[in-house]
Structure formats: C-alpha cells, structure tokens
Image (tube, rainbow, N blue to C red; front, side, top):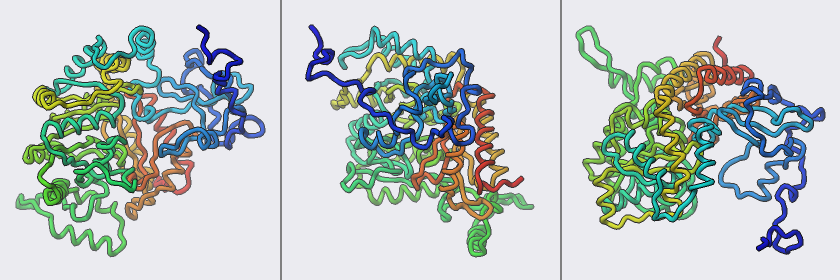
Length: 547
C-alpha cells in the first residue's frame, strides 16, 4: 500500500522542512568577506582533531549563509522552555568538540570547533559520539529498541546487575526511567509510599527537575508560578561556605601557648569592625570557617516547628551544581542521615551530575561513606541519552511493592537506553575512568586556582574531580560583590575563542562558571582548555590581573 505522505499530489503530503524554511541571514556571524568577525572564532579544526578523524557531517548543504536566523526561527517555531539560545547552529559533535556550520565555499565540512566543557547538558560522560556507544545504539535500534513495559530484556537485566554491583551494599535493586526529574519523582513517591508520610525536605539552591514533586522541593528557580506547589515541601538552608550568613561563621580554633584552643566572640567583633571600616574580606578569609552544623541544626528547628508530623524524606545533591557548584561540607551528608533517622525519614541522594565517576568516586556519596536509602542517577548514566535510575534496598523495595507502589511509564526499563547504560558502566570500570577523573580533576583544579591567584575577579574556585565552579566577583580584595556582567563578558570571550563553559544568569547562581568536561579528557586537553580560559580572562577588561 502506498503511503499518503509519500504521494506528491496527495493533500496529506508533508512538505520538506528544509524547503519550507526561507534562507535568512545569520545573526552577526558573517562579515562581507565571508569570514567570522570576532577574535579566533574562525579557528577551524586544527586543534580539535585531525581532518581524517572528523565526524560525518549529516547536513552538508547547510552553511552560515543559508541556515535560518536562530532567534527568529525559535520565536516562530519553538516553545521557549526557559533559556536563551546561542547564535551558532551545531551540526556535529565528537569527543570534546562541537562543530558549527561552515562558511559558503569552505573546503572544510565545518566552520569552527568549540571545546565542550559541560559535556552537553552535563551528560556526555564519555564524550560525544563515543564509538562503542554508537555501536550499541545502532545495533539495538536495528534489533531491540522498545518493548511493552511488562517485558524484560537482556540489557535491563545486565544493567541492573552491573549497576548494583558497583554501588554500596544497601543499594540492591533498580528501575530505569528516562530523565533525572522522572527518577526523582519516582524516588519521592517511593519514600512517601514506604513511610506513609508526605512532607519532603529539600535544600536551598537545589535543582531536582521540573515534574510536580521534584520541582516542589527544589529552591533554585521555577517556583514563582502563581499557584500552589505540591503540599509538604520544606527547606533547609543551602550549605554555601563562600557566602554563608555572618551568624554561621566562627573563628578557626587555634592552640595557644598553654595548648588551649579558642577564638569565638572576638572574631564576631573583628568581622563587624572590618565591615564598618570598609575593609575587604580577603585579608581575613583564612581566619574564619563556616559552621555548617549550626546552620543545619537551625534549619531543622524551623522544619520541626513547621512540620505537621509527617516528615517522609530529604532529597539532596552531593554537589549543588545549578546552585553554583557548591560541594556539601565534609560530614554534612552523614549528619543529614542521622537527622533523618531521628525523624523516621528516608535520605534520597540525587546524583544526576555527580554519579558514575565524575567526582573521582563511582558515586559521590562514597566520599562520605554514607549509603542513602534511595539513590537516583540520570545524565551521566546514559552518556547523553535519556536514561535514569532509581536504586534502593531490598527492604524498601519490598515494602513499596506490598503497598502497591505504582510508577508504570511508557519507557520504563526500555532495552536500548539500558544497553547504553550498561556499556557506559562497562567502559568506566574497564578503563579505570574513576581514577582518571580524579587525576584530571587535580590538574583542572590546580589550573583554576592558578587563575584565581592571578585575577582578583575570581572570588572562589570549588568542586570535586571533574566538576568545578569558578565564581566571578567585582574585586575579591574589597569583598564578594557578584560580578554578573563581568562573568558574561568572560564567558562570551571564551566562547569566541572556542571554549564553552556554562554561566547561568540566574541571581541565585551568583555568576559562577560550571565546568564538567567528559571524564575521558586527557591531560593535554585539560591544559589546552585552561589556556583558552586564561586567554579569555586576559582579553576582558576588568578581570584585575595581579601580576
């Protein structure tokens, strides 16, 4: 039978999208001579990979002269989901490199190469188009892609066994979904089912997804919607060591000549005196420390006062990435688990970005020796494909089953993404990429701290492994005033020079660059990226070089 859509004269024939788009000028990217106008933006592929190893261009007819103005196209054809689109049309991606459309008449299949220091949306753990992942996708797309949700397949069995084998004891059973928000939704529902309670605690500046329950316990963005969130959402203060409230600072204890330790009240006076005299914070930064425990216990007192005695769970990220790349202080997660146990609550840890080796441990909870009641994984597990996981203990899984826990979705335990996740884990373990991420992270953080020593606009460098945050301020010698405009100029210049690292403009983010390259990155590639970032700082006015 002939398809109606393939019959040229049929009223149901679908027009070609390419033909339906009138060519539009590229927004500011093409000069009269056909070459990009800014800095090194015309840098081709020399430093990305050699010509013999370039990925296939699936869209060879598209150039900078005939692809649509992206902002105009988006305004006409796409729903804005809360972002600003970048001006370049990305037509290919491979390993660390993103490739733009070429100029007309170019001998190269691509325009310029951009080094991707965010692994896409913090997801392409092994790099873009990893050859082994490509083979798994192709083979399963041709033979075993999607099934009825009640059917099981070898990829699902293999992934469940491999995943639980690399996790701490007590994380015994898994289910596989599509997105991080979906996995957190399932985890919260599971906690409510298990405890029979409904109140869920999140951290300030957290991000857990845009589904109903996940968004109701995140406190970074998206809450001002004008209608009620899911009932029972409560908040602990965000553990921000760099910008903690004055009331949660304490002077570092130092031994005096008699071996006694002290500090305390004099320090509060010192802080106030420094503020009154207009002195900067850098001169006494090393003399104080963040009292996260006092802040946490203060938060719990407020929660206990607000609660209607139905506390079900806490959900937390080991590194608050969207909130500015803040690592939970040492001991924080363990104390949080203790406070949960006191109240009969479950601890849910969301490792969307930190999981599967990025921080130098298979999962970031291993740094603290804490086993959560429920662990969620997403982004990194699928290497950019929509795959997430909920992992819990036998006892919690059994009780939830007895109480008719239901999370039946179209793509639960789909074979194709499960096969990808299984291959990701196989490669991470086989190639010892957890140790590699730790070693590359040391080089990355060393380089970023060298930049901090040189430029007074860098207020803080933080992170763990191959996750790093660089917070930009006006002048750290005078204080911690966020340098949002300066950060944007630095980010724009780095992008022009061929390096992409994410900078959110949301106020709670505070002008912090988020850096999370693939964990397959080499020493040379780390150093090349640092050199480009250094060049961006050097070229932007107001970065305040100190030498």
